[in-house]
Length: 510
Image (cartoon, rainbow, N blue to C red):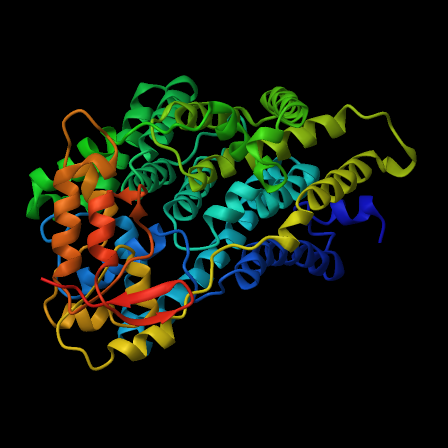
């Protein structure tokens, strides 16, 4: 089957196209979904596996969800620096963890998030189909292999779920014809979805503002107002019950503590490298011309997309990208937030470019362009086959050393409790729930310094909490990285109960 024929089957099948072309269409969709899933799974299997130590945040969200299922409310009973929707999304997996073991519950959740990423690639194709077959295939492939999307969806992170909700909002507000407005019920549903997105990650408010501005221009004040009202309702449906239980703490943790986070010391060029996915190939010192050429290509595709029906995606890309460049704190998975508008912009730009190509025999130009772009995206992403994400953790071996201990197990990374399958035991025993030990430093300001190791209040809290267990395992903080010299010396002086490789279970001393 030639390239033009492959592209042709991505189009909406007509009544004349029945049977075999329809089957080919689903094979194309299935292929993109399969590539997306494997792009997220294989680096994890090559690294720490489904039971390894992940991004830290995935363990935080799972432990917080397990606490919620045990009757501990976030904000009221323990610190949680993000809105609560992620806990509701993870509740089925934490419930499974109660039956199968929390290590299995988190592993299943990680696989589900990879499948969520694959479904996001398919939704990207679905959104782009009205623009043309080139847009659908190129945009879907771009999302499937775009490294920020791959990294943010390889485990349980906020960005993957946020991308799903953004895609649903785009689909709900997509016009079926230029002069036919979106049905009011669909507009309200889109607003509710955008509000729900803000209850996943508070930065979702930027998407609400972009949609508001877009619908003010295209639909008028009344319909834009309906969208915003529905977004408030969507956010309130999730957040209000938790807010009522602890209004002051929730505002402090989710808003004030986040705004007060220390600024990242990474240069802005490093953010650009990670936003464009070049960190799959390059370390920050090796940037230069590859970054310049990539930004130029994105700018050219954005101009083409603007002229070819992708204006909303371009606006989202500019606004979300600008927010990520300006936000004080930075972690690599933040870049995943631009995955949807980036892939849609690339797809829409490719479709526009295909219409400007010289005519080739058999109208093969669009198919040839799409084939070349898909091959180029695949080759660009080839390093994924050699990538390793996560690191192994000997959870089963270390669990044996604490199996018969009374009391609680404390840690600076809740993933250790999950992989040792002692999280539920801690909760059953009424142990103090600290899902984000590092996050407490944002809620404990220190005069004159934003560094944890110089924050005496947080150092005292960390030692007090770690010492409260009958056994403790620290894997995240050490001397001059989080811990002060005094705190590190205190923890390292505790007798070692068991050690596997670099991971040691210690017995806290009075």
